[in-house]
Every structure is written in C-alpha cells, then in structure tokens.
Length: 295
Image (tube, rainbow, N blue to C red; front, side, top):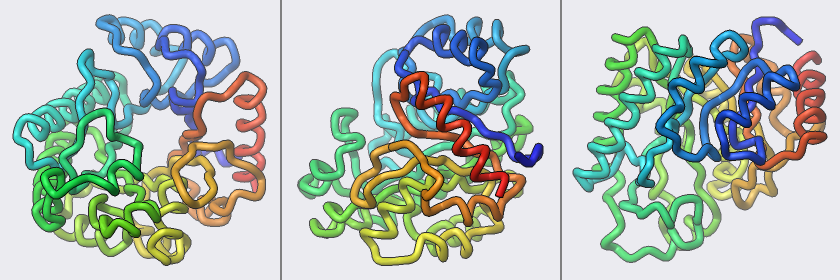
C-alpha cells in the first residue's frame, strides 16, 4: 500500500461502545489509526483516556465526537437558535480536541433544511413524512450552513486544523415526498458553490461513498462525475457499501464500485465506516482495503 495513503477505522466499526475497550482492541490487533466518531458512549474522562493511547494511535475526530452527555441534533444549518449555537459550540470543541491530539482535520456532516429531534436522525422515511413546521427553506438553510462553515473553517485555521464537510445522503423516499432539497451538499454544484463562497484554504471535502451511492441513485446522476467535479477539494473518504437505496454501512468488497475513483487520490485519508463488525470481519476488511488500494 502506498505509504502516503493512511487508512483509519471508525469507532462505529467496533461492537463495543467503550472508548477504553475500543482502544485496547486497536492496540492488541495493531490498528494504529482510529477515527473518533459514532458508537461511543459519553464519558467524562475521554481526554485522559485518549492521552493514555497517544503513543499507540493516531486519531481523527468526526462529527458527533466528543459524545455529549445529553443527545442533541448537530445541524449547522438549523434555524432553531439553541440547536445552532449548540452545534457550533460542539464543532469548536471538536476542533480544539484535534489541536490537542495533533489531528490534521475535523470532519463534520453537512447541514440539512429540517429542524429535527434526535429520534429522527438516520430515518429517511420518517423525515420524508414531516409536516411543514419542521421544514427550513433550502436557501435559508444554505446561508446558515455557509455562515457556520465560514466561521468554523477560520476558527480551525487559527488552531492549525483543517475542516472537512461531508456530503449528505438523499434517498428515493425524500425524492418521492418532494423533500430532495432537505439535505444539503448532495450534488457537486452545491459543494462547488460552498467552496467558492467561502474560499478558505483549510476547507475541504470528505466524500462518503455510501452517501454518494444512495444520493446518485435517488437523484439520477453519476457518482464518478460527482467525484470528478469536486476533485480539487477532496481530502478524505469514508468507505462502506449499501444497496443503493439506503445508507447501510455494510462491508466493502473487492468489487465495490468506488475503488477506481479512490485510487486517484493517493494523498487522501481513508476511513472504513462499515459498522458493528466482528473480529474476523475487521481483519478481512483490512486486507480488502489494502489489496484494493495497491492496484
């Protein structure tokens, strides 16, 4: 594998929600790169825990980490002032954590034109049936999101940290219900607009290929064209597979569609985001990724 290309495992890949146990597993099985992300239970001592493993692992910080004691919806496009303030505060704290850990960037989900509760996250069918009181006008959502990203990218720059925004996922359920515009940053032109509007050198894109497969299928565009159009801004990839209908975070395989595209980015950071893997699957996925990236 090209030494310039670093592969991380998301904390969501493990079937344990204890950060200490995940880190012990990583040390035991030689996993040196860990993305701190979903599936970790809140703990007041996570900083001390991470400090214990600084010599063993390199870390990335993604989206909802550090996990809050009281769940909330992280939405950088929210019109609810409390949600927006909490979202920006969380991202600022995550950027500070990146600086502490020596992480090169913080990656965050793109916003959405919906004022959601935590129970509705990751449930596209329920989201597609929401009444108008939950809906944010797409242009207002974009303006709020762009303002958030502009502020956070400059805050990250002052800390020596990059900021990456992740493409969102739109399903056929959203399209059928007329809510395809509810999720931001699902088309290449949206990302190009954001990059042009902000133009901060430390701002880039994390391409989630699972999100991309579903969105491209729902909206009828080529996922390869999407990657080609935003190529100058791509810094990292989240890898998982699905049936093209919903984001399932399934195992990747030798025949997964995205390998030719990912191999075009030898300096990109790669993160496996397949979820809830057993020990044998973790080992197998390492071999699949390393084999695919060698070609």
